[in-house]
Structures are given as C-alpha cells and as structure tokens.
Amino acid sequence: MPYATIQDLPVSVRRHLPEHAQGIYLSAFNHAWERYSSTEPERLEEIAHRVAWAAVKRSYHKIGATWVPGGELGTPR
Image (cartoon, rainbow, N blue to C red):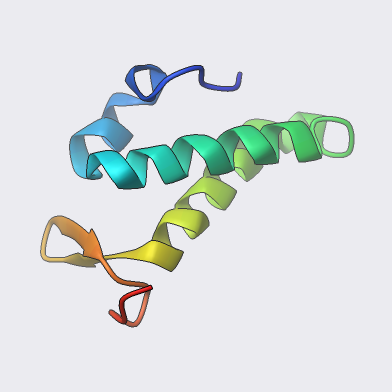
C-alpha cells in the first residue's frame, strides 16, 4: 500500500523522523513498492520499508534518539 501523504506514514515513522526525512521515506517506500510489486509480491511491504529506511540513512543519522542531517557516517550530504 503506497502512501499518499506524510500523514499516512506509520506512526512510528512520523514520531521519530523529522519532516524532511519523512518525505524521503515516503518517496523511497512508494518507489520500492512500484519497483518490486511484480517480482516480490509476498515480501513487498517488508522490502519497501527496508528500502525506505536505507534511503533515510543515506541523508540522516541518529544521535541518541534524534535523527539529524548527515549520512550514516555523520557527514553532511
């Protein structure tokens, strides 16, 4: 189920990620949903969430409980 808006994302995503990161998550999830819908239908939701988190981690990293700009190594992108 692709997400139409940020408000449609799971509460856990909205609660933890800044708004910009939520947009990255939304875009990556929806793209993965379209990309893998015909090849991996039984694992589609799992794959889409994994792709979305990976996309977020390319632009944000976690300090304590807070997601901040900068990739996995903390370098700004």
